[in-house]
Amino acid sequence: MEDKYAKSMMDNLYWWGIPTLFRCENSEAEGNDIALIGVPHSTGNGSTERDQHLGPRALRNVSSVGRRAHLGFGIDPWSSARIVDVGDVAFPKANDNEDCIERITNFYQKIDSNRVRPVSIGGDHSITGGILEGLGCGHLSEGLPISLLHLDAHTDVFTKVDHFLGAKKSAAHWGAYLVDHGKVDPKSSMQVGLRGHPRTLDWLQPSYDYGYNVVTMKEFRAAGLEVICRQIRETLQGKPVYITFDLDCLDPSIAPGVSNIEAGEKGFDIDEAISLLHSVRGLNIIGGDIVCMMPTKDSPNQITALTATSIMFEMISMIAENSALRLKSEAFKDE
Image (tube, rainbow, N blue to C red; front, top):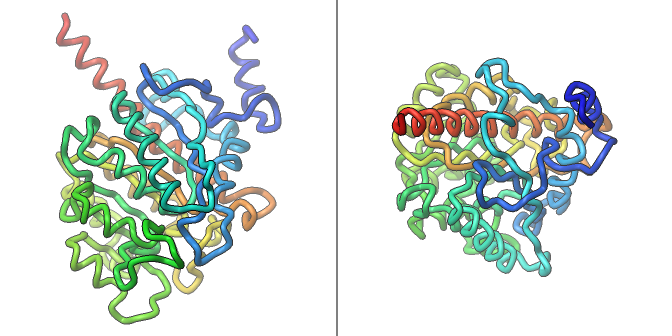
């Protein structure tokens, strides 16, 4: 289609054409700036219905209606950086969580070796463990452990039992074992929005013991958005930053299709969530993920998938903006 405006009009129709993430070309990661990746894994979270593996397909189906230009940043990320949809991580042993996590790690080690920054859609939250086993102390982080911006209703630092319903590297454990393995630096990481349904009074203690900077939802409401955004930026400044965004940190009114709904306390609204993401704008963001979408629990209008699309777009735009600035800097040095 030669007319770019006609093509744009058609690309906005989610039911037309071959679905890729944001209509990106399906291609290998090598030679590009950003790799969009589906991680259809759901055996790391045995506490709920295991439909999170349907997340990547749901997002591909609706992401074509997502924004193309970022008016706030004044950029078109798709022309500011080389962005491709590299497809999904393959799981021939999908019911074996440990095998799946190993495959995720191997996949992302190859992404890291090409120095391509991944933005991924899961999948349950165990995928973050596999991803960061592959990226931590690697090329993108320049050999350093990764600093997290972790937005979630739950800590995912479960240490009371060494497995979760049989899964060792589960959605509940990754925040602990990544620190044990030296892949994440908890002292320069933030966990924000915690409001999970605690079964014990000491449910936050493992996060404190590991050294994470914790902001519960009640603490967020008391301090205010501006204060917490400033704390995030000060904590992660100068570090290799990875964003992991569990959709259950959002209020169920805008994200009902998640695997662990927390209905007892108001979650983030979309403006708060995006402002928290923007607190790391301009920092060295090496990648990010969006997890725990449950398409079978979503509303008929697919509001959760559309919200996830908006979150993914913000991550992509921040990384694309950094890529464009790096290219300008390199061009200036060559003059």
